[in-house]
Image 1 (spheres, rainbow, N blue to C red):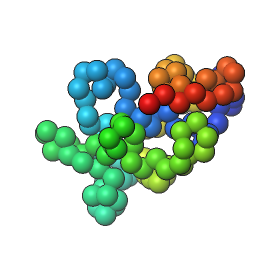
Image 2 (image 1 turned 135 degrees about the vertical axis):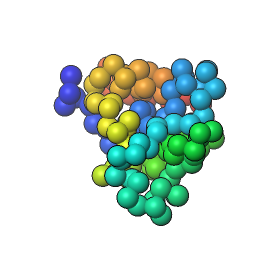
Image 3 (image 1 turned 180 degrees about the vertical axis):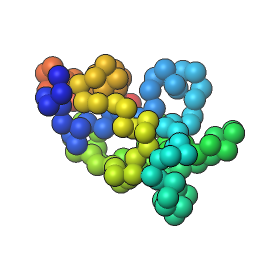
Image 4 (image 1 turned 30 degrees about the vertical axis):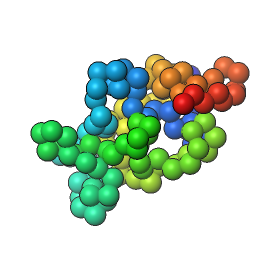
Length: 119
């Protein structure tokens, strides 16, 4: 399926999933010890927040969207830390089940090529 999806027109996987929200998880993607973002303390401070155990996670806005994601979901987006994004961000690949699930949760209809964003 890869190649049929344009991640710069989506951004759905950069939002906290319904499952995480239902379970009360407010921390998003963990920044692991080996992630390149750790080599940039100023960016780490700007884009992350520690969880209850002091482990840095990417910050979310009140709607559960990663603060590093700029632009409009389903239209045109970009990641402010893309070259330094944590391993967790790199795990979702275009067209994967995780990608499709995120798109469905955000109302981005892949088949019809239209966007019906839900609040």
